Length: 454
Image (cartoon, rainbow, N blue to C red):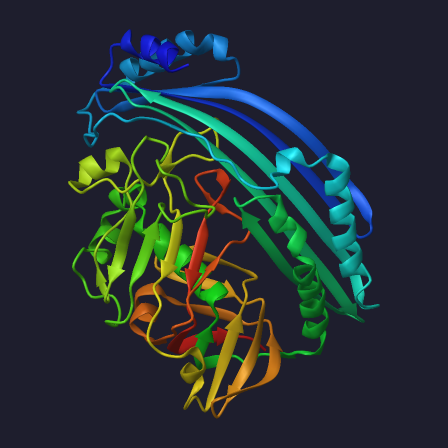
């Protein structure tokens, strides 16, 4: 395959050309209540070609590898027709590497019948938990991708991308009050991870039932403690996406807000994106442009120190490549995406973060939310009232709203209990979803947070 790709690419007249060939197999099993709702097993094979000519890209996807040469020519022709500017692409040394991973008790070696039985058991755990459980969903997905990447500069990389996720949703009802709780895992570590999550199914059921007894949070401004899940989602969604340079490059107003060297938080706050961490969902030795992934500080000791790049955005902004060009599959071109994004641990024992809070909110888990530039709204999956430094009664319908930069400055405590969260949800951007990522954080304490409620 390497020789074939090299031969095809050497014939093209363009500033730059790359090819991605991909083959994958996937299984999905879904239980709705105690009944199986969906079961599928599929295989797919395809590829794409991307060419850069005079600052413009031509992009073509295809399903037959036999059509490779014609499709590469087509991508070059498209780019040639529309190219009218200077091409920008950060220089990289060619790489030739074959990376094929092996994992114990791998899901490809487990038959479909066993997977269905496993998910049926988890579904029964949720539905049998309480008479108040009205409905449930237990969803299993595994996927095994092999990707060949080559470019006109001499790079050839073969990588495998395994992925397994399990999602549980429990819906409880008491009269007109309906509450939902979700739990999930996502992993690249092997099928055995799916065998060890009975407690996760029970947790989803327990949380949904508990929420029926929780009180509605009174709206107001509070000191808030976020658990590692909600803090990790917050830094990913509210800050991480603003650090993606394809977004920044096109928005002068946000460039003025995201000036490198600017103080954006306390000296204790450091935020990292690292695609090189071992065995995580967002991990890959090389990104989808063949760039080596690495640890990138976005905020270091409260100072804005970096952003995430593709080769094109790095060249346009005069900065270093970071290994963050990623695509969900061969159907899409690579764009700037996060990998494993997290707040580094602080020095405070997390229980001490609650000290001296007369009346505050402990917000946990993640239910939903949205961001618009620097403004955000997030809903917690569950929460508790904090009174005189103690966690007291359970609360529900907790919505946190604010300005990102004000909120970062209002972080007044970071715990030492750092945790990486491997949920199975993935990240969405530019129509590409779900892209496997992880996020993480210790508990964090934020003052003056606007909390919506009744």
